Image (cartoon, rainbow, N blue to C red; front, side, top):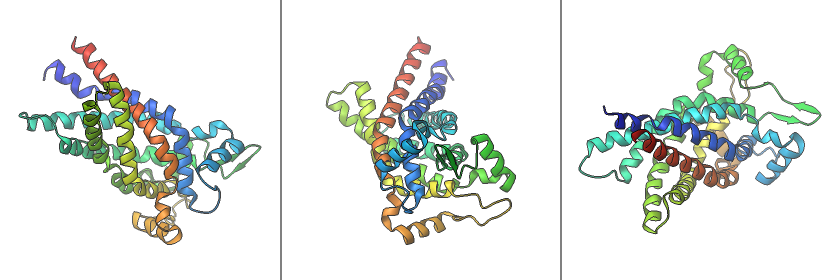
Length: 300
């Protein structure tokens, strides 16, 4: 393998780190609002996304919006590195299989699907810790249900109560959710071609196509994300107990539909949709910029 090919295959690692940090800075506050709305379950804690945002800041301070940020700070950099490295290598593999033509949208969908399924095994424990920390409601001047001091304390207590396997509680809905990466990267290819045909610059194309593809992805995958976060954020029933409120995907989906109807599967959708365009647009722009810059630097 030539140096050029090696660079192409590993450039996703630094590009993924940069992309992950970008996502955290831009998107975590609204991600906290989204998770709190998803897991609130219609009990009337918040009137809506704006009330959730304002209530969180008023009662807990602005930095409460970054609660649970440590797992994704580490996690998003790792997850994006795994995702983008897998995506890049799948693109190379598919191109080698079809050297007579450039990759088409179907190829991009396949690469996205494989990347999504692969990163799920990395994402599950990270997102489980994040979700449980995000639904701790600390109140200024007091504590409301704060069980964990941070991700390490949370992980230690969960493993002590249920074994290491508990960190993969929610793997199935995570696989379901991230399987929709076919739509993210397939639509990104479609939007990119459409924007380039209209004369947009490479950087503007990356940002706009990244944002639009993220909106497409979240619109069709959101119910799976709700189920995933309900399962991940549920309370620990105690040492050795298996009396989880949602023991599996089916029980969670049935409970949501029975108690909240179809709208329960789209609880918290507004902050997610609003956050996804700038967050993913910026992240994909950073990914494309770091990738192209890195390739130029090392190849020259």
